[in-house]
Length: 295
Ligand code: GUN
Image (cartoon, rainbow, N blue to C red; front, side, top):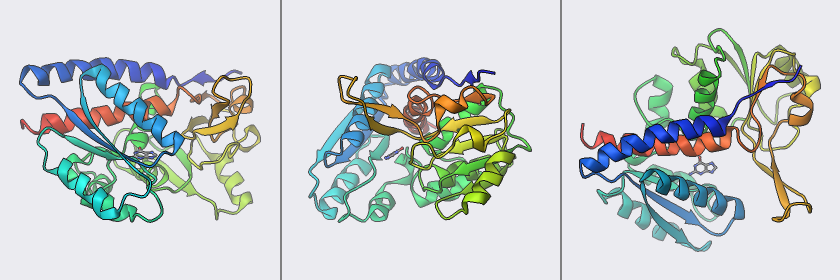
């Protein structure tokens, strides 16, 4: 049977309409939510993500302070930009697009962001609070995955969840969020990664009620690896050459959508699944940060 599509584009649209109203209320109070965006170098995928984030801000009335720095910028110069944004009261959220060039210590940059403006939820204080269940900015992609599960009535309590991938940005936080004593949450979570034995990966995915694929590689999950009533959340965004497209490539996820869509219960498409939700949760955190200034 054909799977139900989990439509991230639609949920993102609904949430953005709601956020737009909240921005309008803040503007009535004289507060214009501001997002400071720093992009280093000219990685095409990063450039495209940052442009999408800034466009989304503009559409709902968030002001974005766009700083583009050359690939060879020094760590000290980059830190100065972060500090400038930390002390600018018009900037409520700071986003440093990752990955950063190899000569820059990513941890040093993330640690320099004021946790009150950490709308990416990457600072150790934000991560610690998230794990402890304290109020904080949740990382955007994992938070977006949770919103999709909630909206599409996917029961997480007691569910066997398999996360494929252990990155700081997706795998680790989404696994933590789903094991929390909260709703959504209360899942039994297994994290598989590049060192998981192939036969073990198969045993875990075959037993899973929900699979979150965030490996960074196409075709990590195929239809022979899952049972029929599984829900698949595909976090991957991979560019593959496609000469039939004007831009010369198309986007595919980490899961083999074509084979899975006729077997599983629910699945997110790529594009139009998790991607739009990541951007929306960034807007959500920026609005929350601006609201925090009047509390
Ligand atoms: N690189 C890939 N995903 C993200 C994200 O959510 N935030 C930032 N800052 N960089 C990223």
